[in-house]
Length: 317
Image (cartoon, rainbow, N blue to C red):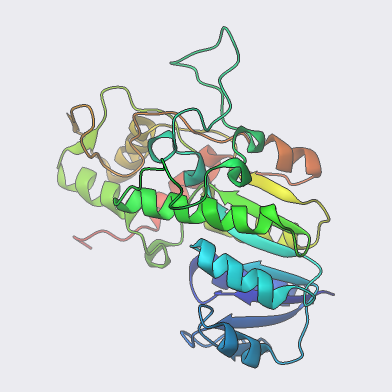
């Protein structure tokens, strides 16, 4: 049994993580701003994580074997957490994202180069060693052009949060770089899969790039299971979390079309133009080899995607 604190844990796979940890016999506490009651037998602490004094007051004298941080989005949040949880936890697991690898939001040359002789259209999936956030310029450093668009803000916030924990370790630390999480029907609050189900069912064209790249996905139950498994391990550093298989947006549309009984229609967008979710004009699908070698058995996208599509609600009912 472990004493686990989940920061966040009020929705989607964070909520599933809390339930799984409790069912596994762990002593689970949730810390959030009071949104949503936790499951039975789960303690809840209420505090705004951005308020360092309030966070310390809510924690009191408590300490934990593991903290799983579901809602760390900025280096400021990471810095508060690093100070507050130093000496309070034996392990810190931060849920990060595959978007940290996105070449569109990185300075040129930040990712490790593709091995000689292997180039597009068959790029190598990125490994954890492809990116070391601690070596990137600090946010706001001279020469670092800021990006105001949401993708940059999200990806850069996660990179810089990882860097805070990595540059001066206060406890054993893991950053879980999660693939695009799907499944769960209405619980999947981003609406990205619903975008495809609704458009294809209605015969509306899906906006795609001329030659879209493959990307990485993981089922929401698998993501919760991976986080719980990681909480019980001893490895540190970044780790990619993705199901086997990396379909591109066209394969995703074909799977949706098979379910709704309608052939997808496409509209190709120009270079630099916005497209539908999961249509990418650059490569950064993830390699899950590190986690697999450490002992986690990932499923295959092809096995769970049809079920995820089937449970996605449609606007037409």
